[in-house]
Image (cartoon, rainbow, N blue to C red):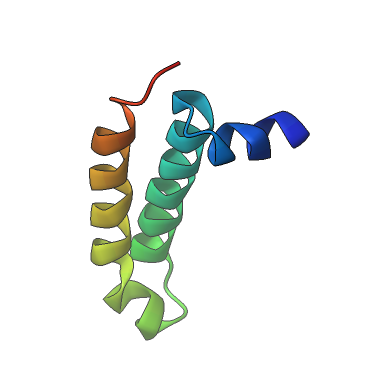
Length: 62
């Protein structure tokens, strides 16, 4: 766990890619859930932010 936070702090690719993937997964979950309209409303922007974030952090050093 500490390695994850130190990876975020030092801008390492592995930790940031994991965070971006988690944001994408949350956005997809928000898109497919039938309970809350606010979650469906913000699902596309959440998925888009995660995707752009993944593209950017894939250029970070290992």
